[in-house]
View 1: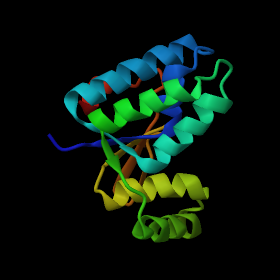
View 2 (view 1 turned 45 degrees about the horizontal axis):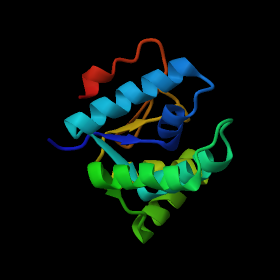
View 3 (view 1 turned 135 degrees about the vertical axis):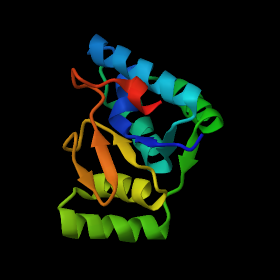
View 4 (view 1 turned 180 degrees about the vertical axis):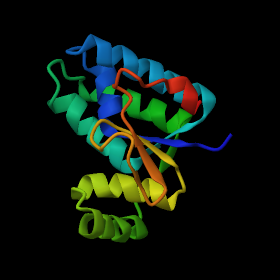
Length: 149
């Protein structure tokens, strides 16, 4: 099966942040479904952001050893897309043409260039589409992760 959904950092982080149990449970459910089905992908950028957030910015941070273990697990079980020079250039275009914040533009550019039709994130306007990339918020009441698996 071809991957259909690029998972943004916030979805990964919620899986390890116990401050919002509903979002944590939803994140685990979605990540598990995407991993099992092979429909999910990550980017090197997402993993790098994940490390920073879960080791420094959540209420109960992971220690570095645990964070490394999590990243190693993702690397062994998910497709991870590299950040290339072409991604950077496309992200610059996304900033200029669509007024994305740069790091959001880089997520969009990674999905666009890899022909991934969906980005799973709470940081974009859910339901919107930019050049064939659809933004979906997994934390809305009407979200059904099984429609993407």
